Length: 92
Image 1 (cartoon, rainbow, N blue to C red):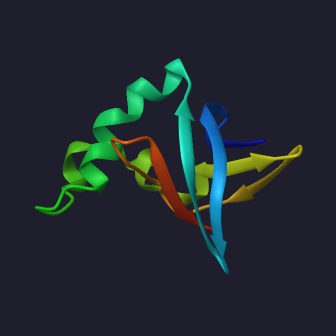
Image 2 (cartoon, rainbow, N blue to C red):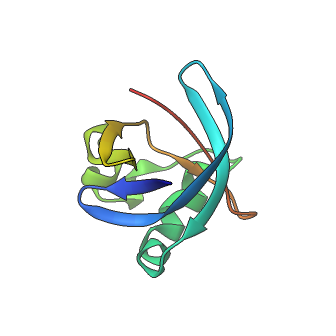
């Protein structure tokens, strides 16, 4: 099982449906903690552009985003979490 992690908070389970070099996509099953990040995830996907001024700098730091799989963590870019509970990200 893979989990999406922000700093030390697990945000949800990921079931991988596709891996392509550094890119990974799959189905995202959010934990209750993920609701605090919903506005951020929506803004990242906004077709009108992303306005980072409305968000805490820490959310934008890729050093804070990870996936955990089989007990090991790996850094990722800020994830794209879609309304239909799909997720896409790339490894750093």
